[in-house]
Picture 1 (cartoon, rainbow, N blue to C red):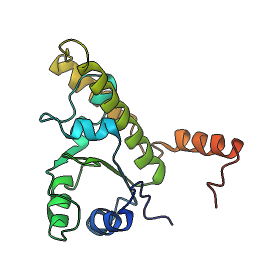
Picture 2: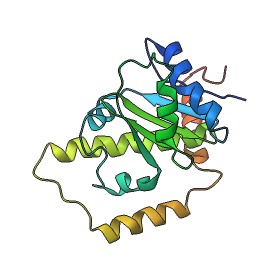
Picture 3: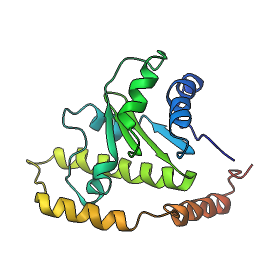
Length: 178
């Protein structure tokens, strides 16, 4: 099956070897790794506090996000150990400081939907910070939202959305299936 889904540009093969391969090697439960460099994702990765618990979307992955400090271009093999350590055994998302976002999943749909909502949370945060001072939900509400979301995380996470996206691509004449 597909072991990798890389959204990197430019040095894609290098990132794939340096970033993706170590996750596949050390986290055999994660069959898909997605790594992006979007304006909102990089913007949040540059913020000292990282992803804030501002919105319902931002609270979904509260305990699943790790942070990895920026070490320059991902060309140093020694960085792999630190990257995997920052991901740990339970996390599925990494905010790569001053770099971008990374999600992993047991399936492509799972990694995709986690990236989709992580990206949405980053967009919401950037938009909220452009206005007045932000307001965070109370800590007990933050915990409640996360607990509620975790009840919906199962083996089929993201499949409905991913299949809908594939149908849309097919209707629009994409050759995504080849």
